[in-house]
Length: 193
Ligand code: ATP
Ligand code: MG
Image 1: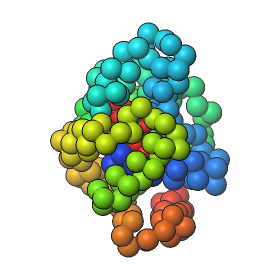
Image 2 (image 1 turned 120 degrees about the vertical axis):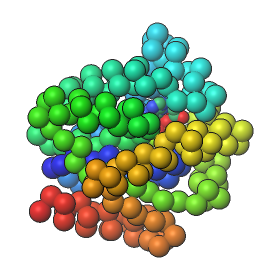
Image 3 (image 1 turned 180 degrees about the vertical axis):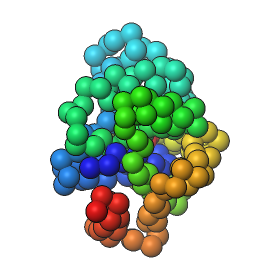
Image 4 (image 1 turned 30 degrees about the horizontal axis):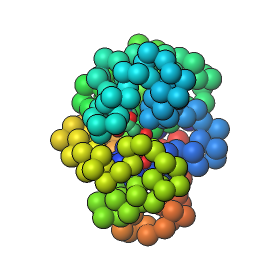
């Protein structure tokens, strides 16, 4: 399977769709958010550094994220394709990912962009706050994450389009999780045919 980059705003469903894709096609799955939360939980030095950024809705510095990502990638089973969930989030991360993969004789594969309106995103994240109790899922931090997304991450969408690998799926058109998954699975199969 080709590698897949799942791209979208906070709450757009990156983690949910990644898990569905990973189990359907037997692919590896790297969620940088989950990696960082595990480091925090385990009280590591990296976790301590990450916590300050996450609690403020800011991104972890690129160099640190790139190192983490490369070592995770190398720990994945070879040959099955990997889903990148929450990475890259900046142009520098995207360039570094492309280089890292090229050094291993691999490529970016395909990018899946999830488009969801901000009112829906806010509602989902506030609901998740009640269910999962994530410290960064409060209204003030969510607003900061949206601002960081618009300033630092959204411009990357164009970068992927220029690479010729962007595939966009719009919640307002698909309307349900099943509708989104249907469209996403079809595109993945087309790209791997
Ligand atoms: P969702 O998973 O619902 O789409 P999200 O994108 O806000 O929501 P995560 O991907 O879990 O959540 O990321 C949580 C936080 O972890 C981010 O706000 C950021 O501080 C940090 N983080 C995760 N990935 C990166 C990355 N690639 N670069 C920098 N910081 C990151
Ligand atoms: Mg996530």
